Figure 1: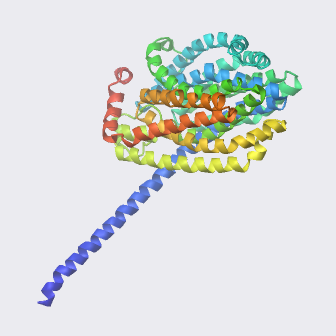
Figure 2 (figure 1 turned 30 degrees about the vertical axis):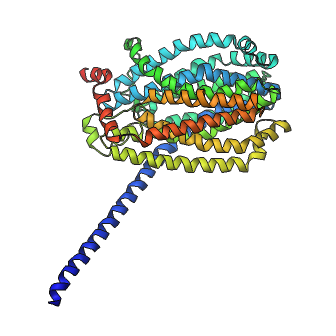
Figure 3 (figure 1 turned 90 degrees about the vertical axis):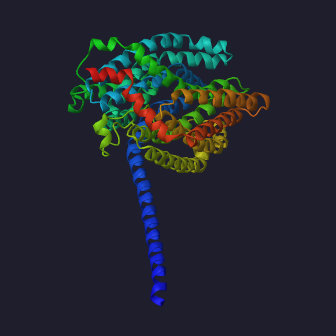
Length: 513
């Protein structure tokens, strides 16, 4: 009788033990998946961060050189750089983002010869776009003066930006080459080229600013020289490297056709980039309307450069998680080892295209945690160096003290900026650029910029108020992006990703060749 009663107890105990072991195995597997995902994202984001930081060094070093020429020179160059970013560089960078999709699809579908055609077409369109921008830059001084900027600063900015016109045309071609290589996962030559350029740029700046005696205009010319050197290195690599043998087959007349298809992708990409970029650059333009425009413009420019430098890390994580959906042909989808096609391929878009919505969700969670950790670390570093950082840009003690007061605010904004960057990457990875553009419009132009105006000009908080306002926009943007991410139907997005690629005109054209 006792043995009969003990049997069910033994069975229950065994079942309980088995369930516990199963739960432990499940927990270990989940932990293993998370660690694997972290390694993948760090492996992909590492080169991205390095490349972004090195590319950003060119503008940063130029501003530093000009800053040591005096407050007026720094304010003029800063205003010119902001105007150039708003009217030119942001537009070209945004349009070049369409190559992430076009080249990524062609490379994934093994239509390698299409990459060279897309690159040529993009270079042609960006060159034509640069012509009216260059004409606008020629009258920058008059435009800024008409907008109410300080006459001295406006005149200096007008002269500075005219010397930057050659850099405009080189920048568009450089962006096309960079994305052409990155979509093939050829990151090393891009990093080497950016590193060599960043290493030589201080010498180029010194030669033109001090050696030749061009002053602040020499820094503008130095930007063009460094961009051209970077472009030349990459162009030579594309033409002589065996890695590009199948993707670059020479110049083709096909590049002159299909411009409308390129613009269909380029315009939405540009809008999403420009909405955010313009809001930050607008801060510097507004600072020129404050009571002490030279000081306010100089300090806001330093803050903007610092923010951009710190933002490169989050941008690397965002690029590792973003871009329009690009997947391999069906046989590559099946092979799990083909988890990434290019460095600019995203973990989210790749997993969605491969029909793995749960993996896409996991990638999103991991990158958000990574961005939070990076943002907090960068914020703490900014607080620690707040009393020294201003002297890297200017010898003026007043400027350095003002920068020190701004750094804690900047540190907080970096955390939100990093989070919105990776969440924007998720939105792009799902192919929802139009939604992202509307969110950026609402966050910055209905919340951020109006708040900045109220803080700075109604409550008279000055340049610090401008940054308070843009931080309001960052918070609103982050919350909007977080809400759309939390309520994303990942299974539906995976189906949409496959349908988007295999039913698109581009995919149809490539399949018929």
